[in-house]
Length: 256
Length: 173
Image (cartoon, rainbow over the protein chains, first blue to last red):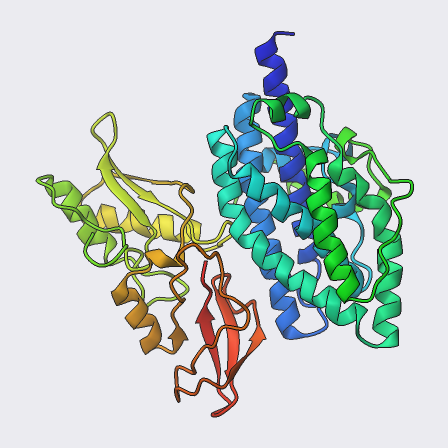
């Protein structure tokens, strides 16, 4: 394989990682539409979902351009199966209760802010433009999700217990955010990608500060789940895609 | 650029470019219909592309703004109605839109319909959470945030503690 082809594959994989993670998490949040604990939060979760799906559209469109096989954002979103998705396992975890949803969101947002702030300086003009746009939005998201984590963690006994449970369940999925996709290190060396491993310290500082205020002890970094970046997903993603892709699977190329 | 930092028509001898700006001034934001897309600061350029074809460049406000496709369509229709049938509308995301690009006229119109215009961002990305926002109806500074996410992606919902009316605030972006 030529150097040019392998760096194109690496860029495609990188854009998919970011695009798929935004798409899957955005879809998860949209499942709250009409079900959130209060109207304002219903609107907030769907607003955030909208931003994430917006980022996914930009990233998947770019992935399709880089790949050069004529796949557009819809083709990538609706015509790939579980094994072809490259999202973080954290993003596909089910919503469970509101505390679980907002903690999952915070753990992701804290990563996304650190990522996009750095990626805005990418040598790749398209990635830099997407990141510069996204970072303004995710800064707003992380403030919102972080405030909720504090309010619920440092809230009643019941809310604290639920948040502690959510933290136990979700923590093993956080390690994957700092893994690299194939070729990511080379892209980072060329100033195109942000080396995910380098986000760990800043993410940990941000998350630790919020958890401390929320009176939630930070779990130790034990064994971490892994696989999303290689297409090895939890059972949950299949159900999510079945719902999200239904129309295009039942009526391929349908438009309206 | 007619007012402040707003992007707008520049002096040109090209009659079609001037006509395009005039046509675009009639296109309103579908979610805040008192504002034209020029006043909203999302018309980034009207120019001739390399082939000499008229090109209108728009920029979305928020990444996921569902009104973007509608705005592009409305702009195309307005250009066609003005006889500029050859013009095409494209979008760009760089540099990213900021509420600082809402024109002074646009800000005044927002205030008039009871939406608090965004503070000037400068280097800041978003409003500080503790920033005082005066009630657009009674002017009281005693207000609180009901929800940082409002009826559209670009707005937050506040409430006046004096007159008790809720009101929208255009988020600083």
